[in-house]
Amino acid sequence: MAYNKVMPNSIQRRHHQNEFLQSQTPKHNSIFKDIRTVLFILKATGLLPIYEEVSSYEVGPPTKQNIFYSFFIRGVIQALSIFNLYNLVMPGSAQLFYSYSDTDNVNKWIEFLLCMLAHSATVFICARNAKSFIKIINEILKVDEDVLDKFGVTLENKCGFSLKFIFGICICQWYLIVLRVTAAKDPLTVKSYIFFAFYAVQNGMSTIFIVFAASLLKIVKIRFAHLNFVLKGYTYTQQRKLLRRLARRSGNIFTVDNFTEDSLFTYRMHNKLLRIYRSINDCCSLILVAYMGYAFYTITTTTYNLFVQITTRYISLNVLQTCFAWLIMHTSVLALLSKSCGQATDEANETCQVLARVYGKSKDHQNIVDKFLTKSIKQEVQFTAYGFFIIDNSTLFKLLYFTLDFLSCNNLFGYPDTI
Image 1 (cartoon, one colour):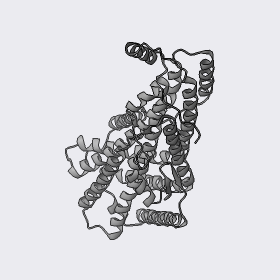
Image 2 (image 1 turned 120 degrees about the vertical axis):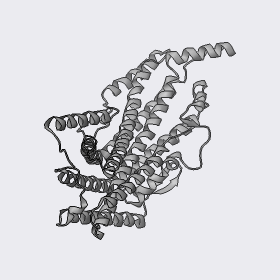
Image 3 (image 1 turned 90 degrees about the vertical axis):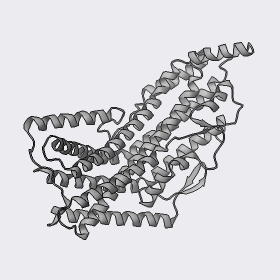
Image 4 (image 1 turned 90 degrees about the horizontal axis):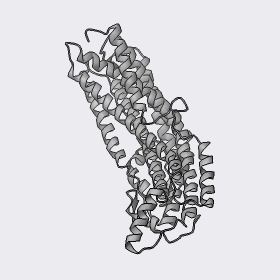
């Protein structure tokens, strides 16, 4: 092991009551337990390699049979994407559209193309970064193993939300297919049924991958938070609380002799987590650009269609339900992504603020802190969509502001009076 086992001090013993921790090691690492469903879906659809679980803290490369399966599935999926594109541009594709206004066919056509682009980008980039995803998972597991070896505790992930989102995405896509079929004025052809079914699959796969990316960021965030919790035990406020508590019990004076050992371990883990954080960003950046472009466009046009429906005399319940389904799905997933990115970034940047409040720093302690702070100043921690824009808690609010601005412009220059 990289670190020797030591008896936990009074600060470390408090970690067992921390909300991030469990007192016993589970049979299976909690990463696999919490996101097992999303991992299964992504592996079954070829977006993630079918790796082998070597142990609770290590995964191995996929076998040749699994590599062939992933390659075959990706080939079938891309063939269906080409089939959908062919149906979209061929004559007779009018029944694929449901016009809300005079220009909506063009908007819907662009929306179909953006969905295909986002899905194809997800498939190609995931195939290219298959080894990187395995490396990310192994590095997270290694951090968990080192924390277990150092403190004797196992970190939780609290990623149960992924299953709820997957269920909600599937319900939305199924409901949208039903609404589209019932809204058709003429009987749909077999090609149209295939188009709508695979369009739902494309939406589902792209969106579920975003849920997976948010889950990884949540996992990294919790590990950053745990390291910050360790360091907070040495801050001035926490030291005063411990001193008063110990003085009442036994009159013993608590020292910070373990600060050097704990801080060096924390710095090493912090640097590992930063590498994992950046690796996730590198693997997902282009996928995020494609998906967020598609989601932003869909939210904007859907909001406009909803606005037209509400402000006209002829209201279609089918159109209203369709608009609400799209808005709920894309807005909730973007909110999840923004929240996960923002929390992981905030926890990564908080370490410097915690160190600035460390209590009772000797000259040696000060040198350790100064060295870490100097290095941290040079490291810019932010999660971006391929450098085009930063993804954090404000991303969704910027989208809402843009959508409201778009509606204001359309209202200023006029919109269709009839549907």
